[in-house]
Each structure stands twice: as C-alpha cells, then as structure tokens.
Image 1 (cartoon, rainbow, N blue to C red):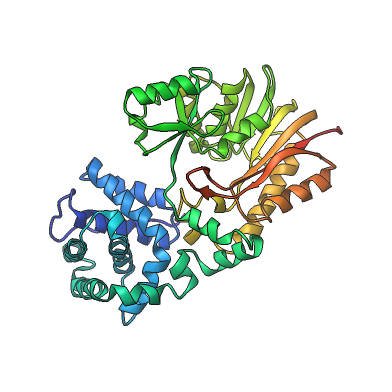
Image 2 (cartoon, helix red, strand yellow; image 1 turned 90 degrees about the vertical axis):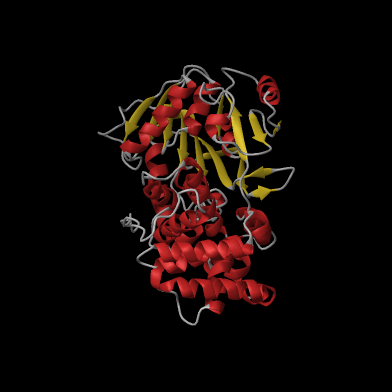
Length: 444
C-alpha cells in the first residue's frame, strides 16, 4: 500500500465544523487515492486526527465520495480552467473537491460563492497551499461565470461524460454493447442501504413493523432483504446492534441460498472477510463453518459480525491457494463458498475510488490468482458436494470465462445459477453487479 503522509498543520486554525476544514481534509484523502491508497484507508488516516467531530467526519466522507464519482468531469474542467497542471497534488485535489460541490450545487446544498470562499480559506490556512489561494479563487470564480460553456466542453471526452477511465468505458462497450451506458449510470448512483433480516431472530414482516413503528420507511426487495428509503448510520438502525439485521446488498444475499445448506453440513467460506456471507450461511442452518481469510486482521471483522449475530464459526488465517499441510485438516467439505479476489468492477457505486485505482492489467492477474484458488478448493470438496463461485466483477475474464474454464478443467457439473448480474439502480430493482456459478463434484 502507498504510505500516506500526515496532513499538514494549519497556518490559521479552521473550525472543524466549517466547510473549509472539510474541503481541506477531503482533498487530502483524494490526493492519497491519486497516490494509490484506497479511499477507506485514506479516510481512516484523516479521521485519526483528534479534533475531527462526528459532523465533520460525515461532511469529509460525503465530499470525498462525491469527488470520486465526479473526478473525470472535474479533471476535465481543471484542464480547461488552469493554464498548467495544478501543483502540488493537494491543490489539484482541493480544486476537484470544490468543483464537485459546484457542479452538483443542487445536491450538495452549498451556495456557489460559499464554496469558493471556503475553498480559498482552506488554501490560505494550509502552509503547503497558502501561496495558491489566488489561483483557487480565480479558477473557481471563472467556473461560476462560465459554467454554461465549460461543462459542455468538459463532457466532450469519455471520462468527462461518464467519470470513468477511458479503458474502463471501452471494455464495457466491448463486453456489453447494449447495456454499457446503463452500467456506467448505475455505478455513478448513491447506493441504497439494504438489510438482511436474521431469520433466526425475526421475519421480514415483523422487522418491517419494527421499522414502521419508528417512522422508518422501508420495503421488502428479496426473500430476506429490506431496503430503507433513506440510509441511516448502522447504530441508528433498529435491532442492528442486537443482530436482528445486517447490511448486505440484495445481490450478495443470493449466495447462501444457492448453496442449499442443511443442518450438520461442513462448509468452507473461503476469502470470507468481512463475514456477511458467513453470517448468512449460519442463519440458514446449523453448520460447521470454517471461515478463511488470508489477512488475520480481517478475521476480526468476521468475529465482530458473528458476535453481533450470536453465531459461531471457526476463523482461520490462511492462503486459499494452498491447503494441504496448512490450514486444512484433510476432511472434505460438503459446501464451499469461493468469493474469489477480483477487480470489484461491479461494486463501484459503493467504492467509487476503485475505477481510478485499478489498472487495465489487473484483470488478468486477478483471474490467474482466482483460478489457482478454485483449483485448490476443488480438491477439498466432498463427492456430490457443491462449490459456488462468486465475484463482484463485470469483466468476463473474471466471471463467465473463469467459470467455463474451471468446469472444463475439472469436468465439473454446472448447476443453475444467476450467472452475470449487471448492476441496476432503478426504482424496481437496485443491486450491485455480481457473478454466480454453481458446480457439483461427481468424481473423487
């Protein structure tokens, strides 16, 4: 991971609840993403500052995520507005953040001149940027004056129009010539908050009544899925702390039912963190579950989720590419859930930084890694057992091509499964882009 440098100390103190403060801290997170750090890690570093209030934390996170969804357009605007690439990098990112609010003024809720003044204050208070406050003022005020002509000009390029790298757009056009535009559109929307009701503790009907009693509008969108009309922090979700419900996208909730588990089965959840699917499996039946992840720190997330749900599994750190003589005891599994590593191209609405962090070559590298994992797990599956391949990718090399090649290598029976689910963001259906392939083992 790229090492994130600490944010500079302010030359003049900014109030933590001011927009100037939020713009500065968000620009630091955006600059870290440009350097190769995932946005959640960059924000965690920012949030470690002791003066940050809950309100500031929410504003910084909101600006950072909005900026990732508008980065192609704001970069195009900066090219038109600046005579040369802004330096240092944090100046570039501050302009990205401010322009994001100006371009989406109706959604952001900030008046244009307020954004300009607060962005100038952010630059003036930062010793790294204080000499650039005139540049910030000139660029942003020119945008306000010439918005009507600048935005059409900036959207003449594919990244300016769609807010994705050109290679990403081209790949979608090739893979999905009829749907590529709707896929790009869906990936730029704010994701809904979808819950999975814990069938061991409640029913969808009873849980909807609990939500209604507290004035929270929601509706059922799957067998155990409930979508809130307006997202809430998890600590405000009724019954969340007590394990009545978990946050999980509707598409991800298909995994556990597809494996058709029954009481007493021995189940492996490979690449299990953060544990959403592990918990769902245990809600479905009394199982002997081994939850595996290569990162011991990520196992803590699984443990926290299972404790909240009052469920138990064996948590083990290990490499899913290798099992013999290591984490596997040699006893075959009845079911294996293989949620393999991928580019995560199907969940960019939840992680909008992914599109800017991924490289074109990542797909082939991750597909190779995933095939190694699948080949190793197959030898651990009981005769007549089932293995479910899951990816949150849209690229065929990681999904359908991977599944077809695996079935051919192992002479595996392919059972009915959804295949490629494209992301949707309509009133009727709203879910991430996932891929499912289910296999049954007939040989030894």
